[in-house]
Image (tube, rainbow, N blue to C red; front, top):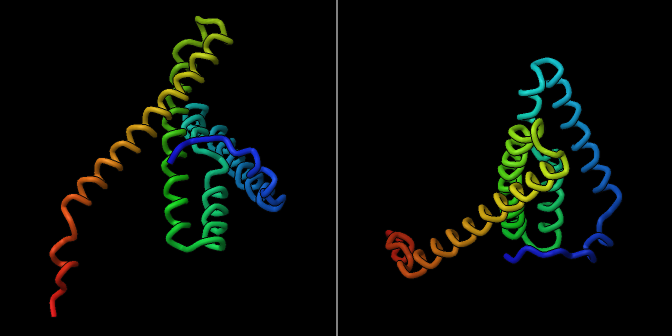
Length: 155
């Protein structure tokens, strides 16, 4: 799958879906705030790396894909969304690490630019590595042919 921007998709978004994402994001933010006030900013910061709207996004995506195409396509789309969110969250951890290590000594604008670049690079490298690994695994699987148990089921 090639990553690209599709602004025409914005016209197809329903306000109810935006509201669901907003509510999920708000709920996660409130929970993180409570955790941070109870256990301190380090614990709260760990949970803040959780993509706040991820649960709503993946649920709505699966629902739409299932209505349009099939349950299998909905699962595939959800898996791709989950993989991208996971890589984005790992990149966000890199962002946080750069900010934590450099903010007190470097210019804040430089820190934000560097941290953003690290986030983008980490997430992008993980996405590409995942894509190449999946393609290699699929090629190997296709070369091997069908498994003997599936090709000749026991009678």
